[in-house]
Image 1 (tube, one colour):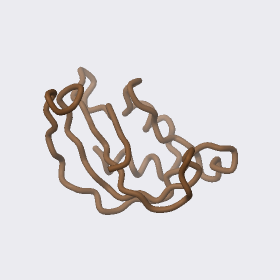
Image 2 (cartoon, one colour):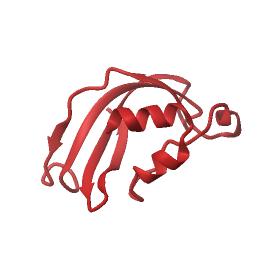
Image 3 (tube, helix red, strand yellow):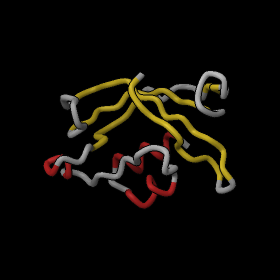
Length: 104
């Protein structure tokens, strides 16, 4: 699921990334070059790791998190470049959805 989401984000597929994201977190959906208008753009990804379960006692609810490396530009407060990024998913009635994400 993470790889599908990342491919959609890289290609500016806002419909896909929004459908796979809960209201709890933002979706990556900037089309290429919208970083010029202040929207963050996920330029590329690599190093997608193994899924790891995170229990509700550690997080705000049971999640499955996947670490990766992304190249971005236009993210508020960050210089364009490479960073570690985690994608945390929950199972919903509609399937797996992105619940939380961020550095680390």
